[in-house]
Length: 362
Ligand code: GLY
Image 1 (cartoon, rainbow, N blue to C red):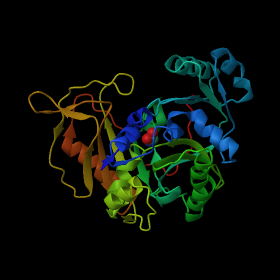
Image 2 (image 1 turned 90 degrees about the vertical axis):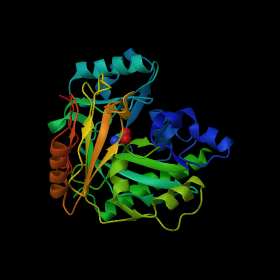
Image 3 (image 1 turned 180 degrees about the vertical axis):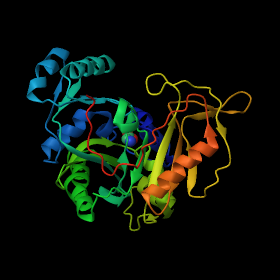
């Protein structure tokens, strides 16, 4: 069985090709992956089926979008319509910056740009498996850290780390997210003839001082790095669960998770996210703590067989424990003792804030 990690092959139709060759694969079809590959497809569905999402509009030209800014902010939320490796959203109080974001994203994908209402709240990632048209398993809920640097400074990245549990996530909020967003969007896709199968990853915002969740974005795959944290919390049943979902079966038993505390710190290469350098030698010493695991992402071997950097986000340091504070300490002391490469970048505040509010670029 193949489990598809990144969105690009899903968008190119890898699942359809594998199925056409009778190869078992976990993930949505190209058509269903539009829930991630086209923001306007996802937002249209939400609008049409009354699924809570911030007010939005898609524009086809720079002048139209710039002309509409005053109707949306400040603050402004500017989003690329298509895939942008998690870096396509700008949230800012600065109108010039909003205009620059419109210009930049339209260069990347001409003719499609989305403006969205700003909601003051905190974000969380809800990951669900979907099989036979039903939400089957909701993993532990994580909070992701998108900006590059401590204190949410610097440019947006695909995600520099995450942690669970978020103290403000209650069982009633999780049920609300399932009942008002996840299950309705799967049903909405069925109604428009799109059958969804795989993981549906929801980046939600919960309005400050309320338990009112809104859909910000969907991913057609596990969140990165939230997926790395979720799988480390599973005690058993993951492979059989993914196998049932890949076959679109009714899934009676979701995987069993230990009561979950997890902190994931991403180690990124020099120059990430603008221009990551590759080929830097990575030194890894034995990890002294059994609660800490290194998961490889952008790594490779050079012609001499040495481990080298091969992408922006190089390694994930995943720590579990009985409290976020202890897991944090374990992750950071292991980074100091056990891993090094030239220009290595990481945030030192993953898990240090509980339920951070959405921050503004300026
Ligand atoms: N962490 C968000 C994403 O996977 O894009």
